Amino acid sequence: MGTLRGCNLPDDLYYYVEKHVWAKPMGDGVVRVGMNAVAGKLSGGKLNAVTVKAKNIGAEVAKGKSVATVESGKYVGPVPAPVTGILQKANEKLATDPNLAIRDPYGEGWIVEIKATQWETEKAGLLTGAEGLAAYLAKLEAENISCG
Amino acid sequence: MSDDKVLIVMTSGPDTPRRCATPFFMATLAAAMDYDVTMFFTIDGTLLLKKGLAETIFPKAGGKSVGAFLKETLEAGVKMMACSASTELHDLVPEDLIEGVKMMGGASLWQIAEDCKTVLSF
Image (tube, rainbow over all chains, first blue to last red; front, side, top):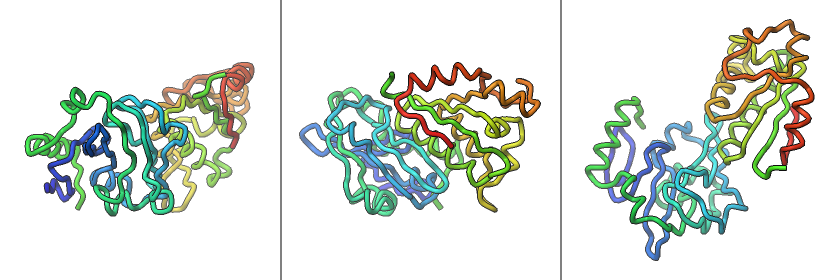
């Protein structure tokens, strides 16, 4: 586990830091995706909706393209795909309880699963482990972001 | 007609602050969903594009200004067009408008609308 500036960021996940998204290989090429503690903080801590565009399920998404949107009173923005692949499924629990994405971001609050097609090459662009978290910390410090 | 193009027509202005947040919110949201979004401002909506004015309008007391909503919408990549006839109505010249806004005649609105799958009007 890692805590950077008050933000819980487990060191076994892969982070797409531009939009504070995490990715976790689940086996068989499937990568689970969610928003991390930093995204939860920046969104204001209370969400009105987390929505996955239904027609995108089953379609290919490129790394960086939007797979979901997050709405709060303070913020509206995309959850971009951290990897390229087929968008396999959305977490249906978020439809009735969007705040799961903040309360339990790395557990029940995951957002989508993608069958990654370029994981081996794309994971190099994501931050992970102690070295990755050190780079993440530098970014948070540079932008003066903290979760406290 | 393009599947990913949407148009939002904004006619509300400073006289109705509570009608001035949702259109920007919906535009930013559409951009986050990877739609290609255009906002067309006409009638009183055009006034919101006057430099410095939107920052003085608050849809909710103590909340975010329309200027803050507008800034986020521009940052999300939404294109903003001002109806040239309505700028005349309000005695605005192009230099009065915030950066990044294009002036456009009514015929252009028809052409954009024809090319969009969805049109919302506020």
